[in-house]
Structure formats: C-alpha cells, structure tokens
Amino acid sequence: MNAFSAPMLDELAAHLEKIERSPARLVLLSAAPAKCFCSGADISGWGGLSPAEFARHWVRGGHRIFDRLARLSRPTLALLEGHAFGGGLELAAACDIRIMTPRASIALPESGIGIVPGWSGSQRLIRLLPEPVVKEMALFGRRISAARALELGFAAAVCEAARTEALAVLERARGLSPRATEIAKNMIHAGRGEDRAALIEALGSAAIAAAADRSEGVAAFQGKRPAEFTGN
Image 1 (tube, rainbow, N blue to C red):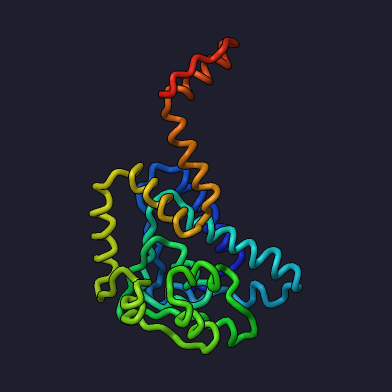
Image 2: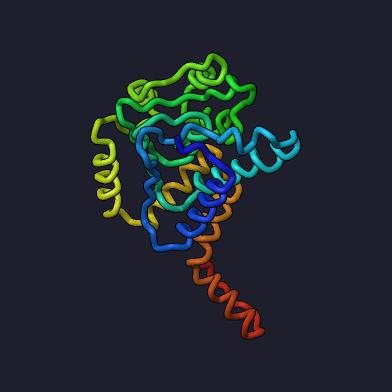
C-alpha cells in the first residue's frame, strides 16, 4: 500500500535534491502498483518512538521533506490512480496539480489510530480545500471521492485514462518557458504564503542579478576601485 517508512522519506528527499540540480523540466509523481497511491505513514515506523522522537524526527522530518517537494522549482503533477490517505494525501497536496482516476479517493484517517495529521494535513491542505471539508476528513473520518475532489478543485481532472491524461498535460507543458513557469510558480506560492519570505528575496535577487549595477559592483570590488553605478 506504499506506506511511508523512514527509508522511503530519505529516498524521496534524495530524489528531490537530485531533481533540483538536474535539467529536468517537469515532475510526475505516481505509485506502483497503482492500486493505492499511498496509504499514509507506516505505523511500524513510528509506533515505538518516544513522544520527543515522534515530534522531532518523524513529524518534523517528514514536514521538511514534503515542504521541499512543494517548493521544488519545477512544475509537479501527482497521479492518483488509487487511494491517498493520511501522509499519502499530504504528499499529493504538496504537488502543483493532481489528476485522479474515478476509483481514487482521499482521506485523513489519523484520528482512527489516535494521532493527528502531521505532514501538513492541517496546514497546507486547508489552503487547497474548504475548511469544512478538511474537518469532514480529520474530525469525522469521511472519505472524499475523486468526483467530489474534482468539484472542490483539488483534482485538475478525473478520468479512467488518468495516466494518459497526466502525460498529455506534461507534454503540453514541455512547450512552455521553464524560467517563466518557475517564476510564475514562485509568485503564486508567495501570494498564498508558501515560503513567502524566501521567495520574495529570491525573486528580488534574480532581478538584481540581471542588472548592470550588479555586474559593476562585483567588478569594482574585485578591481579594488569605486563602483560607478548607472541604475541599469
């Protein structure tokens, strides 16, 4: 059921770092086998942890990795051909868009085993779904169907041939400017509060890096002379 273990989290983190430093243009996140996208966190991976270890390593560690996925500079698409529960839903929520099959569903079943969402289910998810819907899942244990996820805007599309549709979306996106889509993603994320402080400084730094004043400042420093800024 693709339940998340500590080694899987580490592997995901390594993949994200590799992707960020690669020439990859787009990212597709899918599961094999397709029966279940991800059933959440593996209970055997955290069940024996002390409260401090659970909070410090399992929850905060997972949060850090999912945040890394959400802030990846490349456009990301999650393909949900099966159910996404708990950590699996939080993983899908960290992607830019989601495409689902009609039989897929989403849920936050944590309260059924005495815990709460820990990898942004109560934080990032609340920005993607109406508060009452998140409460339905977290407080009442309701499962949300793919059709309803589409109505709510959580899914970009729901169709039997979800993988074909996902690949078609990515193929169309290949014709777009990588730099423009990266900056657009940063602007949208800054607007909704995702890593806003770092994104504002990154956007400002990118603009100043292209300015003649920046080149002059560096050249003057290296030449040990006063800079002659032009404002360009």
